[in-house]
Length: 67
Image (cartoon, rainbow, N blue to C red; front, side):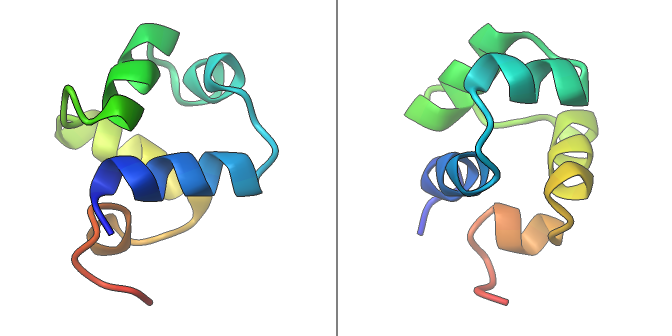
């Protein structure tokens, strides 16, 4: 699974909108939209913030591991 699909799946599972997620991790909703469309990959700071928010590893979020 690609990072954009994994991010969208985690967000929906958490019951959050793109706007809510963006506010919770301190980035713009446009960035979340681009991440989920696969148009942009998160930088390190955003990647860590998203992984911490969802309580998953960076490897899981980026689709490198399934656990």
